[in-house]
Image: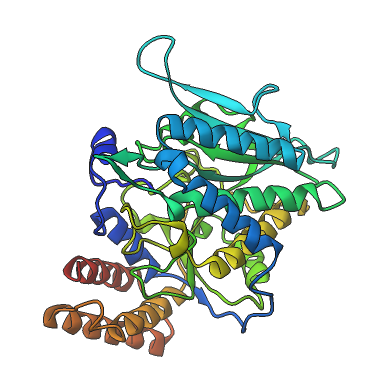
Length: 402
């Protein structure tokens, strides 16, 4: 996940373990949105999906991939292209699986986007697209220390490959065409996704939905263990029904995030958001292993990553086969349920007061904000001013607990 605190080159040179102000905004947004509690697990924890996800994460986060920077990034790209071929996908970029990203000097290349596709079968919809994407780069090796990037973002790449396998093995092709994209250089200013949006392999106005995931294998702040957060539905509220259906009877809590709370675009959804392409961004949020050498394969919650992968897969299939898809809504829809999520997550944070080492002032403000949220829910209405105050209080709380 891109660190927005500092410049692109500095971000690559100075990975940090603590949560950034921008990531705090992501966590703050987490507290503001709709949460759906799922039923107890109905799916086996150890199955082929999980085994493949674990294998992909283990491969991409191995020392041989050198933190997927430099020669390691080239090895990772070759591995993913081989996987595209093994799955049976077509190349996305004019007969090629690769899209070179030019460097500053003429004739140089600084990175490579990867892309494959399955052509849609509906004569009227085959020229429309659903994109499932994840960035595959990370921080590399710094001063002899490997930054493996197991959750950032090998888990997202594993999700993308699993979605591709599901579409390829479905028997019947989707109605719309589906692209599977691995972005490079996300950690350096979102260069890969920015370049693709500037040089798209399909008309952006024909993209019905862009889905990406970044860090889906842990828990925000180490405590929100059942949650996965989703940005983007405020600009396409009709997507919520597909998410609810995909999450039904699955052991995660899906929390919808309002992207309007974020000051900067957080990951590869950003360039698509700027172009008003409907999008969803899935993440379990930052955690103590973020941008650290401890982001290793053995620390991932593979059962959780597998369930989230299935949810994304099912949402993508709904978008690919629906007669119509939700259009971009320039006026964000922010439901009352945001206050319920503020209440629930504040309770969870307060329940971990000692592990999080909350100061007395932070705990006091949490309880005060919790009371505000409960009052709003008691009335059954939330004004824009009340929502703004809840957001601001949450930001202050999360700044205080770092």
